[in-house]
Length: 237
Image (tube, rainbow, N blue to C red; front, side):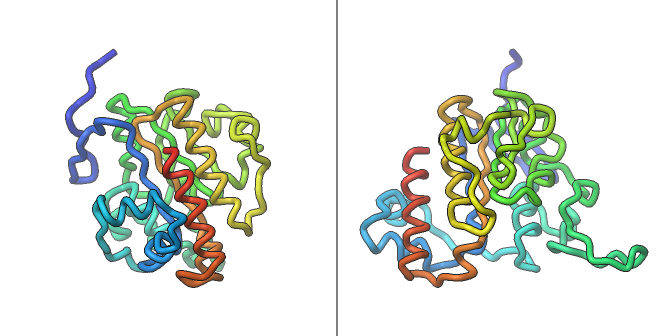
């Protein structure tokens, strides 16, 4: 087994090798206020500790502020003009059609996950909607205990060849939720906890949907309940 490097370089940036398993969470559609309001209820102790004892900073998202460009900017470390995913859709002039930007052939750079796997890291990528899965997992060699990439939306269709894992609902102990539900994101976290317990990946990426944020403002009961649910899973992780 080759020794792990102290850092990995990709797309013009250098990333330190994690000293312990690293979990990155993209809460799609979130904004300042959601976390703070949930913590203020007293029912989100993990988030409260983050706000009081951790590092809490605001950052600009990339423009356009859509799901695909921002997720891909996080996982490549570069802007849309570099990685190529500049929207959720684009207009194909030749086909005279609107095309969803979920095909990895549109991605111009490798991901941080790919660079770390090439250096020997174990990777887990779990998304809510399947439209992001192929982009986020692009280039990974998928196999049990080495790298997995799957979505809540199609967890019951996962194969070793396509996802590096099977029988996900049995592992998680939950059935596949509706696409248009808070539970779809809850499944992401529940699966993350089980994968962390079983495989202990070096890097785990969890990406939710913005279903709740499109319908409920910060501090509303439904929004607070959603963040309190996440708090419970984050504390386990």
